[in-house]
Amino acid sequence: MASAGRSKRSTPRWPGQATRTVAKSWAGETDVTGRDLVLAPGVLNWPDVIIQVDTPGQFVLYYPAQRIGAGRDRRSGGIAQVVGNARADLLAELETARFTAELAARIGCTPGTVSYHLSALHRARLVTKVRDGRYVLYQRTAHAAGLLEEARG
Image (cartoon, rainbow, N blue to C red; front, side, top):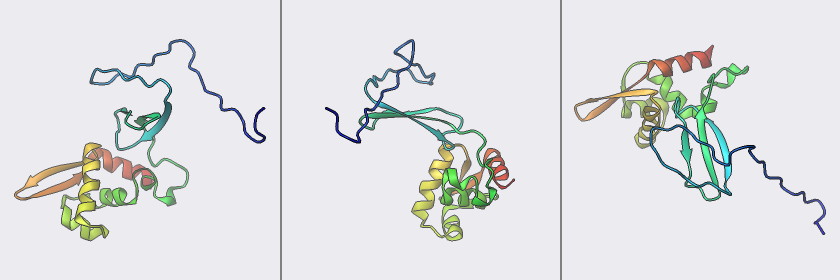
C-alpha cells in the first residue's frame, strides 16, 4: 500500500535509440545509465558545449545561452544575472586594459578573487590578457562589449 501524500516519480524516456551523441573535439564514451540529466544554459562556456560527469547520480550538459541580457527587465543588470555581479563589474571596468590590483581596488574585491574571476572570463573568451613585465593586463573582448551593450540596451 502506498503512503498517503507520496506520488510515484515517473522516469522520462527518450524514444528510439538508447544512446545520444554530443559532437565534441575529443573522443570518449561515458556511461550515464541511471543518472539524472541536468541541462544548464551557460554564458561562460559560449559557444561550446561542456559535459560534467563527476557528480554522483547526475551529469550536466552546459549549452550556450542565447540572447544574454535580452530579458524585459533591463534595470536588473541583465548580464549580472548570468555571470554574477563581480564578473559583470569586471567586464564593465575592462573597457581599457587594467592590472589585477587596479581592478581589485576599483570593484572592492581582493586581488585573489579578481584573479579567479578573470581566469573564468578568459577561459570564456570574454577577456584577453597580455603580459607586461611581471604583471598581466586584462581587457574585455569585442564579444564581451557586445554582451554588455545588449544588456544595457
